[in-house]
Structures are given as structure tokens and as C-alpha cells.
Length: 117
Image 1 (spheres, one colour):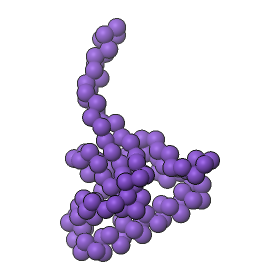
Image 2: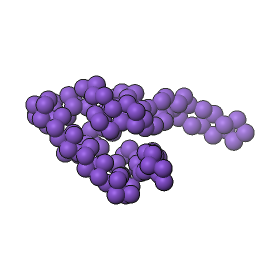
Image 3: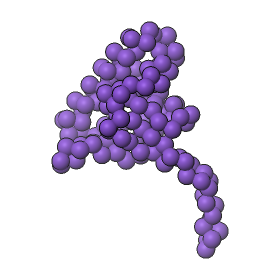
Image 4: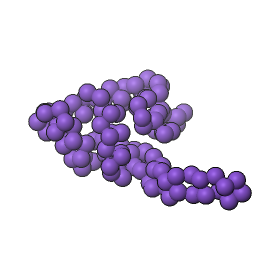
């Protein structure tokens, strides 16, 4: 299962996508801007952040995947948990977790999760 694909899909529609047992990706709206000295125009966008403290399943991701792939909700939760365990193993091996169209996660020297979009 390409969990990162479903997360990126949901981030276009919702402000928060929670990965049960892992954390949540949060988007914040950034309005369009005009740089007055250069007259450059910057369109509206979303700024992406990660919060490792939000881990409780809100059902959004699991329901979306269950509908898209035709699995039962409970089976989808098991598949997500399996992928999360794989991600945690990658991070605990001091490797960078690259999520396509989302960003990169890694553990710093103090064991805290870091994220760059």
C-alpha cells in the first residue's frame, strides 16, 4: 500500500491528516503576496508541518483508503499499522524516511522526529 500517496491526496482537501500511531501532517493556508520592491507575485499556498503528538485515529485516512482499495475498515487499519511499524523501523535505523510529494522525516541526535516538507 502506498500510504504516502493517500496522505498527499488528502492533504489537498483537508487541513489535518492523522496517521494512527505515528503523527499528523497539518497544512496552514498562506495567502498570496506581492513583494513591493520587486513587484513579484507569490500565489496562495499551503505550508506543511508534522506533529508527532497527534496519533489518535480520527478515521479519515483509514476510511479513505478502505473506500479507494475496497478493503474492510479493520483490515485497512491493520495495513496502516504495518506500514507505520515499517516507517518506525526505518527511522530507528537512523535512516531518512522519504514520503513522496510530502517530505522527509528523520530522528535527530536526541531521538526527536524532524520533518522537512
